[in-house]
Every structure is written in structure tokens, then in C-alpha cells.
Amino acid sequence: MSDRLGILGYDYVEFYVGSAKMWAYWHAKALGMVITGYLGPETGIKDKASYYLEKNHYKLVITSALSPSAYDVNSFVTKHGDGVKQWSLKVKDVNTAFEQALQNGAIPERGPKKFEDENGWIEEAAIKLYDDAEIVFINRENYNGIFKPGFGKPLQNINISAQETGLQAVDHIVGNVRTNEMNLWANYLNESLNFETFINFGPGDISTKYSALLSKVVRSKEGASVKNPINEPYEGIKKSQIEEYIEVYNGSGIQHIAIATPDIIKTIAAMRANGVEFLTVPDNYYDSLKERGLEVTEDIDELKKYGILCDTEGKGYLLQLFTKPIGDRASFFYEIIQRRKGAQGFGQGNFQALFESIERDQELRGTLDR
Ligand code: FE2
Image (cartoon, rainbow, N blue to C red; front, side):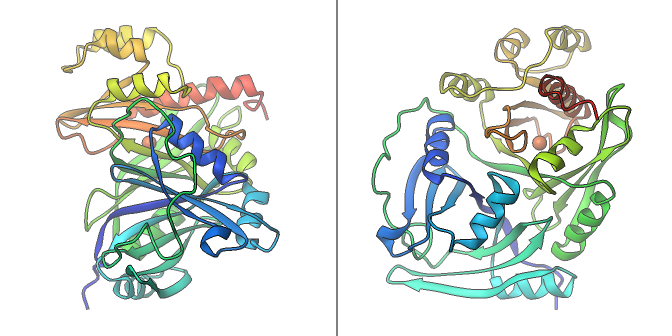
């Protein structure tokens, strides 16, 4: 038997939140996503509501509980607040992927199960990730209905006006874990899913005089499009922002999702017009960018106008920007990324700029001191 799982790429991401309707509205307004599906009492599900949203290849399910009987959603939200419950991998065959992952050491959550209705069938299975997160293997190729059986057309409010953001697809999904958990989870993904470590930021690579982190990036050997950085706190005189995340989220979980765009200037202009708040970088960031003499197509003054970060990576370069946490807790946020001239990895300069920017907000929240 081959050790390949038949991974084709990311499929959807699912959030568990306090109010799915509000979260769906935010994603429609801020990211220009379209609500194309709904699951709830009107479709025969009594105790949950889910909204399905799409923007090109970025697919999202947002779920909340309608009664105490929706125990999985309630217990997750009670513990973590709003957050990512699962991300999914499109696979050729769910049985093959699940069996191979288990043989490789994955911890099972749910075995393969088929769901069907008059529009066809889907199959899915799930393995464990971090504290209360999951990775779902899914095959929806034989389904012609809305998302998957149980979902119907959205009931109302689907024409939410927003500036066109041009967002395309998930670029990477990042986890924050406790001290000494990074290697454990990197090895888990590498072994279970046939991934490999391709970047390692060690002690001192990403730090300020106050605080630090360690980070490893793992990616699928079957398709480099699936990338998962994992961060853990590193010792410093003050509290690492990864420790802050672990405290406010009450455990390990997904810190951010990066979504790719073919034109970051247009995307950020649209998202700012849609009311999205971003992390800020000091003006002197752009002075040093000019001094470094990077060969970039974009006008640096325009990057400065929109607050976009720029860093070399391999023979290409990366343009990135990070939103502020989108909920009330300083946990989940989005990244917008444009990879230029074949850049595949993650620039240390931008990672450092992100780290410093979050640290400034940490100081405002009063969570930098222990
Ligand atoms: Fe990122």
C-alpha cells in the first residue's frame, strides 16, 4: 500500500461561534463572501444553525447552537469563545485517506461516513488536531446540491453589499500551541498526513527584547498548496503573544487563516472600505524597505498608504497584511497574502513585523506583563 493519502488541497473551514448569523454577516460585509447555503430548523435540523459562505475557492461554514442539546458547539464556545473547529482536506477517497492516516499514527475522531440525498452523496471522516480542533477528510465530487446534504438555500439577507475583495483561496492555516507542543504537533502532521517540515524559526529568529516565539511550517508532500505553520511561546522577560493566545482561547487552537489574493493593493483597499481593521506597522518600516532596495513591482509609497508588509522569500517576494482579531478575544485573525515571482515560504522579516505589531497591541491590552 502506498503511503499517499490522496490529498488534493484544502476544502472548507468551519467556525463554531456564539451567533452564526452575525459572523456570516461580518464575512459577507468584510471579506465580500457570499452566503450560499443554510442549515437549521427550516431544513430539518432543530438545535444548530449553519451558514455556508463562498468566495472563489475560500469556503466557510459558520455554526452556532440553538439549544443546550447542541453539546459539541456549546462546549467548544464555552471553553474557547468563537473559533475554528475544523479545517478540511479534499481527498480522492475518504476511506483510503482515513485508514492511511490511522496507520501512520493519527488519532481518530469519526470514521468514514456517507451522507446522501436526491442531489448525490458526500463522504467524510475526521482526525484529531490540537485541543478541540479537527481535520476533516472530505470528498464532495459526487454531490450537486448546496455544500452537503442537510443544507438548503439561504433564507434571507444574502444580498449584503460589500466592495469586491478578489480573495481567492486558503494559502495556509496556522496553529498556536503550548510550550513544548510544537514538535509534537509538527511530527503528528508529518507522520499522520505524510507532511514534511520545510521552515524552522528557532530561538532568536522571531523575538523582541521582551518576548519571543518558535515556529515550524509543515506542508503536504502530496501538494505543496497545503501549508500549516505551528507556533509555540518562547522564553522572554515578558509574556509571549502565543501565551496570551493560549490564555484567552483557553488552550491550543487555530490562530489565523491566510487567504491569497492576486492583487493585494486592491484587496486591502476594498477591505478597508468594508470596515476591516488591520495591524499597523511604524512608518520607518517603509524607509528601511526603500533602503534595502528590494526589486518589487509595486510602488512602495502605495504599499505604505495601505500598510502592506513586503519581504523577500527565495527568488520572489511576499506581500502580506494581518487583520486585528476579528472577535472580542485576542485569538483568531485573518492574513491577506500575495505571493510574487514564485515565493513559496514565509519571510522572516514579515513574521518579525507581525510579531512586533501584535506585541504593541498586547501592550495596549495590558497582557504583555506577566
Ligand atoms: Fe501566516
